[in-house]
Length: 311
Ligand code: MN
Ligand code: MN
Image 1 (cartoon, rainbow, N blue to C red):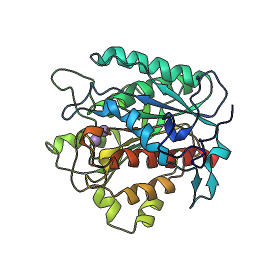
Image 2 (cartoon, rainbow, N blue to C red):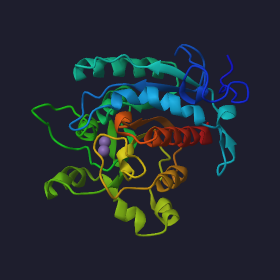
Image 3 (cartoon, rainbow, N blue to C red):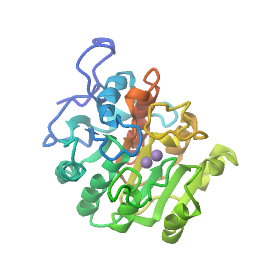
């Protein structure tokens, strides 16, 4: 099989069956480098639902995707064989059953020595992915977490697992290494000062929008830690962006990053082995002109580029 996007000259971009980046759909048993997949589950949201519809909409908007990275001077689909492996099976009314299905789907992909980029789903979908990654790699992962929110919150309505608690569980279950974990795009208001206790106790490095903006963006990016040892995972919650850049999300917070700042940060990250990533919390029903889905496509492009750099 040829792992190249369909040509827009032969089939204009509004035509044909929609897969991520117009790449072939392939079973995970085929031989390629990166599996793109959907996690269409939003049973972990506390406010506006709808992220279950993101994988389909992002596939559609990814018809506008291109493969050449201008500032890196690399052609992604020459360096990496990438395919759409479809969506994980989910159970829309059971988070527990969905977690089992996602973890198994990711584990099956990892067994074939592939990297993964997932489109959520709400942020609760990241936890089963990290569980599969931790088991496969045998060590806690380095973790780069883009978000307006800490996602280290306690149980809600007596339910431990929801989109605002996944990062706490990821640390407490030993899936990620808090000493090699950073959070970018954070901002208030918070419910109280206590909200910060977990990240401070764990030694997680946090970067607010003020931290990003206080200096030139290039200076900020060069101040970030490098991830040279061990497997690294990136989780990109689109609400790290300002609602003017990404309105289609479940829990928008004013005063966020611009799309350009997020691009600059993603381009500047120094990672030797990015094994997996996701883009979560895109809620198409709240979107305007598919802006947020298009941002999702752009973030996927930058994530693929980070994988291609070292491939
Ligand atoms: Mn989040
Ligand atoms: Mn968030």
